[in-house]
Image 1 (cartoon, rainbow, N blue to C red):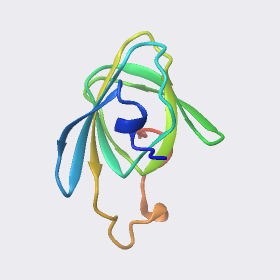
Image 2 (image 1 turned 90 degrees about the horizontal axis):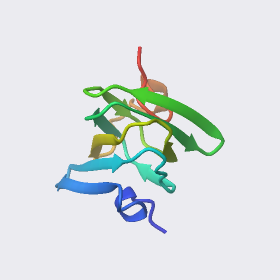
Image 3 (image 1 turned 30 degrees about the vertical axis):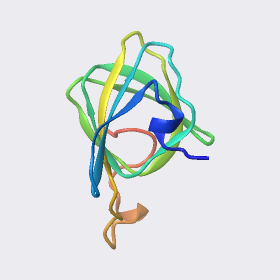
Image 4 (image 1 turned 180 degrees about the vertical axis):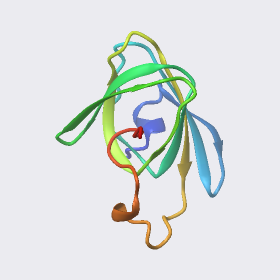
Length: 119
């Protein structure tokens, strides 16, 4: 079974652009909306709206609140989520199709987990 978010959650994910190196997805949802499990490769996320959501990956649960205009790195991951706020979510994902360069394994990443990290 595919865990491609465009296939598992077609009401929320839309492909805006794709070539051999990247895929750009638009994600939208409303308060209370949930996604089913899906996976993302290494990606950059840009938020077009301010939102709050709970992300779940295996036994790890995390709530994130992101402001419109935020950009962040997302390491490859599998998760599902729910909009636990009172505003719609509107996000762009730039998914990388190329393998990570040597030496950039999990120990070399600055961020990890279910969503963008803030320093």
